[in-house]
Image 1 (cartoon, one colour):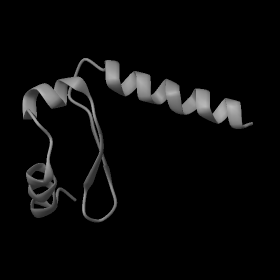
Image 2: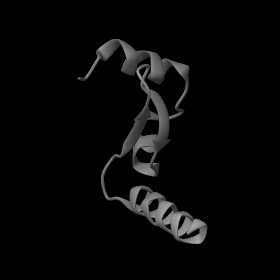
Image 3: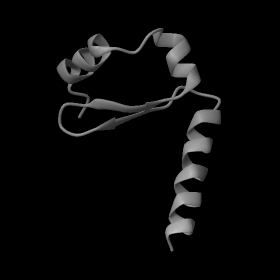
Image 4: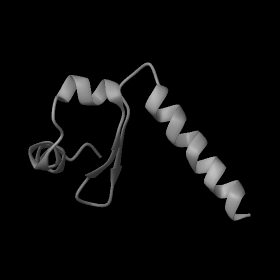
Length: 61
């Protein structure tokens, strides 16, 4: 079962990282950036605390 879950997670990671659009996965109530694909990193430049603060203050939901 563990091998299956690892392959599943790796498959999702690969899918997000190869997506032809910007993909960001946020975690928790403070919208901490969990994953940002290369397109997002290119658009945003260096991802740092300023981006997390901006996401927190925008309250998208």
